[in-house]
Amino acid sequence: PITAIPDMIEFLERLSEENNIPIASFGHAGDGNIHVNIMADASDEEQYRRATSLVREIFKETLRLGGSISGEHGVGLSKADYIEMEIHNNELDLMRGIKRLFDHKMLLNPGKVFP
Image 1 (cartoon, helix red, strand yellow):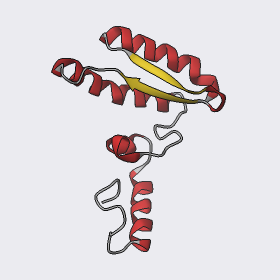
Image 2 (spheres, helix red, strand yellow):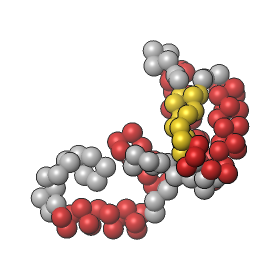
Image 3 (cartoon, rainbow, N blue to C red):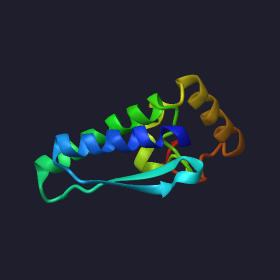
């Protein structure tokens, strides 16, 4: 939500400082949509491990503030492992059922979010 942007920015700044990892945030303040990029060095295994753990923390705070992890672009593969944080298993089962209804041979977009 637009009203939660300042709280989220403060959270991201604090998280960045506490973990000594730059976090860039930008987006569409007018609709409450923030894109977050954790600027970790993938060649530094320790930093990359810490950065990866920050993703779940950022999503938890996003949901606590009333936001969504999917934002404007949907879930996609990069967020598929976190979808259960926002969408209940019953709802996911319903989505899988709808996919099977229209794609009973599972030919469309194989191996993606709903395998």
